[in-house]
Length: 212
Image: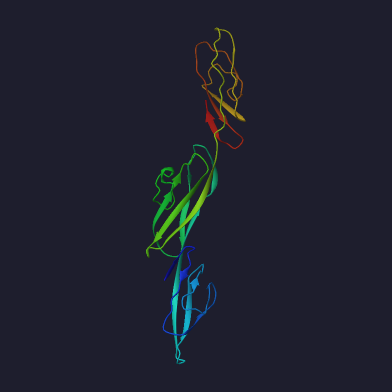
């Protein structure tokens, strides 16, 4: 028989008056005909059955286990993609199915790339060649994008300076660099000879980025 995941497997013996299962490991009761078995790996049991006449018979059963695994827990920035991994212990996996499906590039592969916008638990369902099904999960933590702010639009006369007012992070990069004294300052000075638009890339202390 196959034990799928954490679900206990009920053993069944018949034909006697007393029953003794051995070994007693992982059994709910070794002296009943139908104990629950909860081994965490492949395991063999032997049952000794005795009838009212004192006749004894012995039989055995091999339990094969299959457990789903999920790994790849990490912290990413908003907008990033990460690969998570599915696997199984025991059995021979035939299919993998991840949920939520809409946050995976392909939810039906073993190791999908996922792109959650907020911290999300991804659940994998593994089915093996014996139709044994088990699930497991992995958390992907998401840091929000920094509050990038390039400031308000500014009008100046030709020959005058404009003072940009960036905020929201610990590192800054303005583009284009035209007319700027230092593109890496939060608040650089511009000497524009014509109307120009600047974009600000902000990086926070975790390396997460946003633009404005």
